[in-house]
Image 1: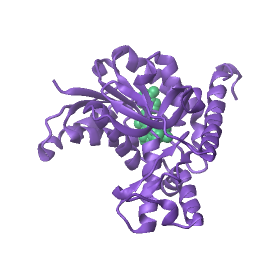
Image 2 (image 1 turned 90 degrees about the vertical axis):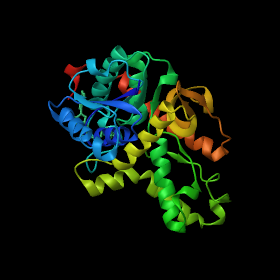
Image 3 (image 1 turned 30 degrees about the horizontal axis):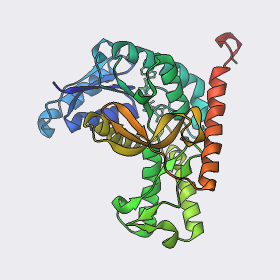
Length: 316
Ligand code: APR
């Protein structure tokens, strides 16, 4: 029997993710959204691409969760996306309600599933998912690090005129302004980046990476990035469904690792059929550890804002 994947939110990120996963052909896909007819329509359109692409997988759309029962992996992309001038944190309360409700439904219908959280602000939404579902931490993972790292690798490859495949890098930390590119261990074909680029060029690329999401929002004006985010999600799903055990930067709930306790932060993890199979502890320089602490403090602030949220009646 084919594996089963649920994607909740059939907007830009969700529909593109569903397309990428359907085209893999290794799993059936259920696409869920609150808008009536929309996930059904997109799923049927995708299904009708099957004969052309040569995939026999099933894809269906729904406005409820019965059809999602028994999913091996569930991807949460439901929520609102940024508009120009908004930070990811501006989405906090709206997406907290949406993601909390979605996560609860997913866990009820698929208690053994692994949840990949994509909705922003990412680290806080992953925390909310872990809280409402009560799933073990191995089975709640956030997508951010692969995307941030892909942006960093894209800009470095462009600057140096080399293949993106030969740029090795990691961006850790929270998915926001405090993300932590590990510059010292970034290399191109084994050569440290510091020997190939002047410091000011590296600094410029690091800043463009931090602002990578906002750059796209500024251009699109009506929404945020979805092609690169969905590619990153698909890489995580590949590693889980195919039990590839890839080591990928993802948001994981830390319990002491990297000196962080009780928060989701982007770190390298080994992803396999049981979810996060290991949190990989790489050596950080003092500066990198300080930057990670700073990033964790920013995530903690959001988590506290969620915990201390006033009751609905008191909100402006
Ligand atoms: N249940 C299911 N779907 C929902 C719900 C809900 N409770 N609330 C909203 N949605 C759906 C919307 O109807 C919409 O189709 O989520 C979808 C979001 O799609 P887009 O607005 O296109 O947003 P998108 O670009 O896909 O981003 C989704 O991912 O990258 C993050 O920051 C981004 O938080 C945002 C999320």
